[in-house]
Length: 375
Ligand SMILES: *Cc1c(COP(=O)(O)O)cnc(C)c1O
Image 1 (spheres, rainbow, N blue to C red):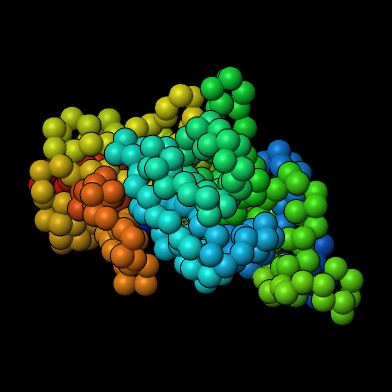
Image 2: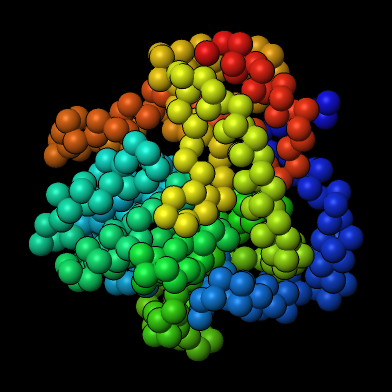
């Protein structure tokens, strides 16, 4: 059996070595490290793939979220609603910009932001909602876009974990997540579904004026050389990373399919155990692209399972062990534990198994055997 890893980037690279090496070589030969042609080519390829009018590449996914909020003109004190159960980057940038984060609970079934909780949290100061398509499955965008329209709020999609996932509207129409809200943000961190070999990120929007604003912000607030119209940042996707991404983008659909195939195998085996709740595969026609394979252990043996798997050399992880509202940096007296029942429970029950594009059947069998013998 091949060595088990949480993410196997080496085996993936071996299969696309030539395309990736050629892209990197092109940058080295042409000395176009910053803002080179490959950045623009990748940007155009991604716009076409996502069906979104504007892609603005930037340095990482956290910057992408921050710049999206800057571009929308959110002001200190504006309230921004986001999920309590997610990676901290989302709430971090809200706080950094001196906006007021409003963390709300998630659903037990899809682990995404709860529509009821959003409705309860809206005040006259609310300006935006940031749904996170957690672990690769889209949040309920029909309901979120409806609430946003009714209350005149912006929707900023945190699409760091779900690039390539399709969202099917109640009407039956389908589109890629990330381009649904007013603005979307993604990360190309190496382990993400579309990952480069360093840091990278991008912002998406269909709004021409907002796209123009964002392109200035990523470049020191410059719209004309050495004319700084707004306060910006320096956030670039470098040409080498763009080259890697341009080579990998044509494989994204098959990569996501490989993740789904692995998840299906995990589900088939693990769902037989009454103390395990496996992730819902698809719902309402929305596909899950399994950035992570996360299941729940409902008999109190989650921590024991973690140790058991680690003892057998099986990589595994807890995404996420502590609710954001309980983190020192984001604690707030406004929060009431009774409002975070689901997140509190998920943090005690979830565990993630290896998930990547190169998982083999014997690996899945070895991993699931080890899970079942313990739970
Ligand atoms: C990875 C991730 C980010 C941040 O991306 P970076 O490129 O690491 O800055 C933001 N939000 C979520 C949900 C993520 O998983």
